Image (cartoon, rainbow, N blue to C red; front, side, top):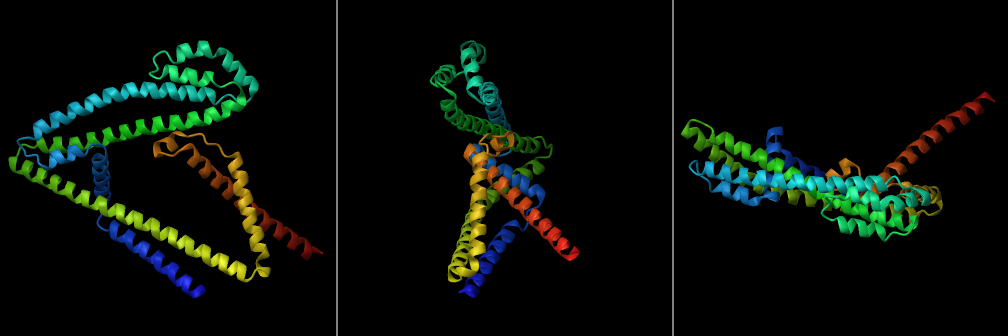
Length: 315
């Protein structure tokens, strides 16, 4: 049983490595950057790629003018959206300073005046004011604040996605503009043809990447499941000799539980950019606390053992 599971695990791990190598071959840094850029444009504005694939050197100026106007209009809308996001962020930041009944009650008393200036240009002014006014005490506030952080995370993530999309489309449009600015008609035709070919290639590789990524996930979870099966099988087969192991597993579960209790769901700017939710951040922080505790615990055991052995030898 043990040999079969070991062979299976190594075989799956080897297959995962082969998949990664096959996908990574032939990708230098420049190709990776272009690949990521095309993939992002495909996700945010697939029509832009479709239009370029059928474009000619004669229609390039019209293509550039069309998408320059589109990007400019979206940037204007995004600036307005940024103001709304900043209002929301400032509100959640101020709420984050409330930590007990006294601070909550003080803020609650000043809220009518506070909301007049804070939400003067907020598009969802009534929703924010009525939402907070329904909170009667600090206990209710904690649940309200957690939900508000989730809402802010969604708003911030959507904003950052739009920023990233506009950046990718702007970079892509610059490539097209550089081609259009070439003096030689032959060079212009050649560069446009090469860009159109690369778009088709990257589209195909994007699909392959998604397949490879999903396959890697499957292989990872199958490997973890097999390791868990082996661990349980080995543990219950030798229950008496594995009491220490069971105690250790129980200790790890306790550390994770304690780590979860003290972990914060607050979203950092990096977490927001990565699209993390408050719950995800709480579990990440839980894992860090548990890892730190196990690290320091291990060091303490090693140092303690060395001291005890040294004292025994001294006697």
